[in-house]
Length: 109
Image 1 (cartoon, rainbow, N blue to C red):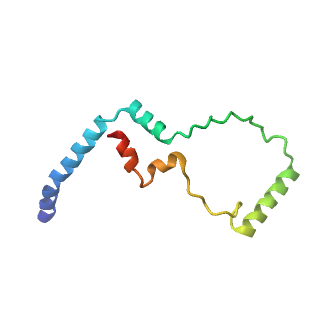
Image 2: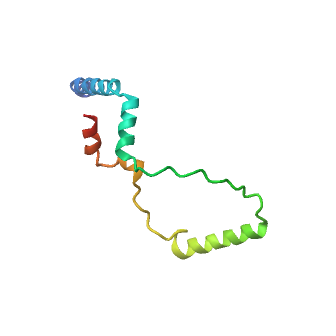
Image 3: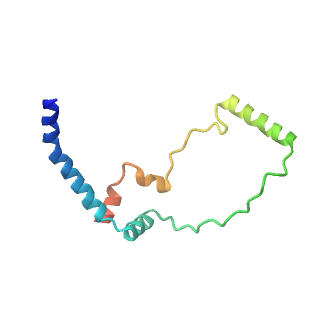
């Protein structure tokens, strides 16, 4: 127990320093500016797509549903997945969470 207390006392200044750093970083956040930096960095220049019409699936009868279900089972049993393709690496906004943060951090400075 005494050695545990001793270790905690030695680590405590490091924890305080980390908490101070986290507090400083949180206070330096500027939501509008940071959001604009992310938008400018990752915008594509393409026009956003138009809304598409929603069609309710209430018109399907039991025969169509059974056929669709059987087809789905056939595809999954045949290839292991419906598409049979490998999962592609996602880009776009998800790439801001990748290991390539150097360019984003350079924009902030």
